[in-house]
Length: 128
Image (cartoon, rainbow, N blue to C red):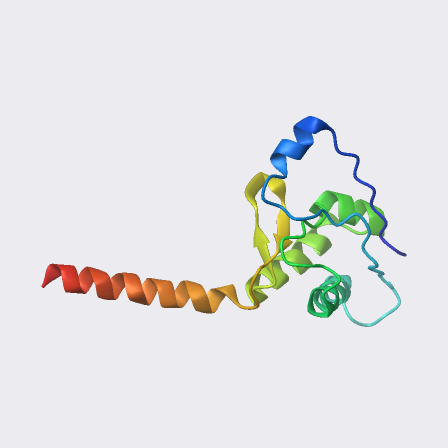
């Protein structure tokens, strides 16, 4: 099954998308229920490949969990698991109510750790 999403946008919805480069309207994601690997893994690997290939550019807003789950005819938790795993890998980031978008950098967790370290060192230097 191929996920094909067409998202009509009205002017009010365009205000929600400020700062987002594009919206993914067509994803070539397939789920094969006969394969031994989980559907979550299938979705995650396909989205990961699309991101690595540059098909999904940085800043691209992905479809909501519900939209993609309905399109693929899978449970919403299946898509949520794939999205969360990609977020843990640093490939996706949460845009709050906007949804999830492709991360601008490959690994955001390393940046977060270095920021925390620099903040703590600044705090220590201020205390002295």
